[in-house]
Length: 218
Image 1: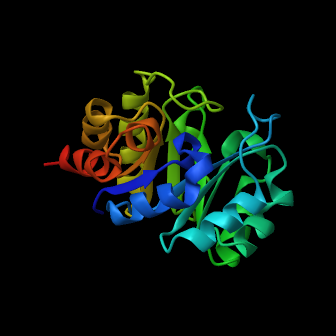
Image 2 (image 1 turned 180 degrees about the vertical axis):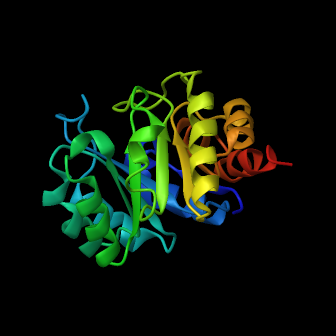
């Protein structure tokens, strides 16, 4: 798989979100990443169904929707209905991970599972046959602009080995503290999807910021 750049609107200028989406799309982004937070599973409240619906009307790019919420089973269908192309739920948020990943796939979206920094990769062995994307959190979820957690590199390497063992094309996504320096390291460890918020939308030139992330692979 080639590298995928997924700018996170958590760091976008929300007053001018339409302009920011156009800048990302015209700048060469592959996906748009949307962090949904409920103030319960993580200590912050961000976006919900109406925002995903609005973003869907503002871009043709695939919407990569990351549900950092408790009881995700109550909302999966709603997010799919308003245009989510990829729906990622947290392993820690449900005791019925296999059931919910299967539901996401039945609804026609790619099914992703995310792991908090303290959750081992080995917890995914029972769902590796159905998952389409694994999201490794490289910061503690809840806030943008945090510092990259160093042991995440080892975790990405473990995830890459697991994916290679099953021989499936599964996206390995990383989210948190991704800039030109950390991007090079996580790609070398085996990731192929970069979620970048501050390093893209915090830049004066969104297109240039996206290109710099893409160039670290060269």
